[in-house]
Image (cartoon, rainbow, N blue to C red; front, top):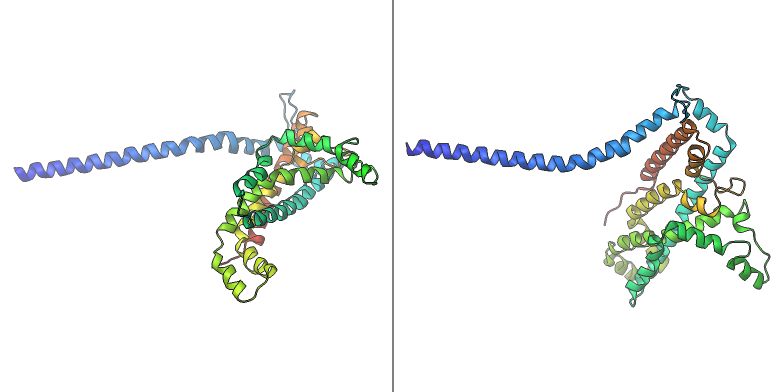
Amino acid sequence: MAQTEMNAKMKSKKKTKLSLRQQRNIFVYSCLAVPLLFFIFIRFAPTLYTFNVGFREWDILSSVKPFVGLDNYVALFQDEVFLKSLKNTFIYVIFGVIGQLIVGLGVALLLQRINKFVGLFRVIYFIPYVTSIVAVSWVFKWLFMNNGIVNSMLIDLGFEKQLFLNSPDQAIYIIIASMVWQGLGFQMVIFLAGLENIPKMFYEAAEIDGANSWQRFYRITLPLLNPTIVFSAVIGSISFLQTFTQVQNMTMGGPLNSTNSLVHYIYQLAFQQFKMGPASAATVILFLIILVLTLFQMKVLTRKFDY
């Protein structure tokens, strides 16, 4: 009789443990389902819907939205403004990413060498990153106006006055410079974290072997910073591919569409010309560019390394 009661108690305990485990699983999966549903309905569904809109003649004032196949894509590649915007976007990516990587790594290396006021300097360099993009854009616009501070300094030094933001050849590089300057703080933090993870004994051993500063940088620092460089390049490329706010506030795509980015072109199509079909098609093209470029960078830039 006592044995039977003991067996019954053990069975009830097993059932209790099982039910608690089930409750815990239900709670965990419920918590995971909330962000998943958010991404499905807020991110994935609109993205798939954009593919649908890109294949239609989409007039927001008409209830009839006929299927036109690839006509929107063909029209885009026959549009000189789209091709110019596409070219400009790659200029933003190439010069912007290279500039951010070089300047960010350079500042991180310099900050790593100082011993006093380290926190203060890091805060100073990081402040632009958390500053409003609109505010930074307008400050740069004010600096490089025809009668701005930079032109006044050039005149005082005996140089000719420059067009800067009014020049089809110079404006895009002014915008890139503003983006590199504002993103410097983020790149600095990433590179500082990568530099701190490199064991000091490598540098000590190389110094004992007679390696100079450049050899230590080229043979130790760069190879072991590869994962950091890949991460920074991918994040920077995505950021520059989505260039919009700086263009809108500094030049509005001008002069002569010389600074127009792909995202700004999509904005013009969708919300100024109300051509939702071509705008969605351009968005799909941008999505594919980001996907292909990211995969390419991760494949080409990534190098195997060990300590």
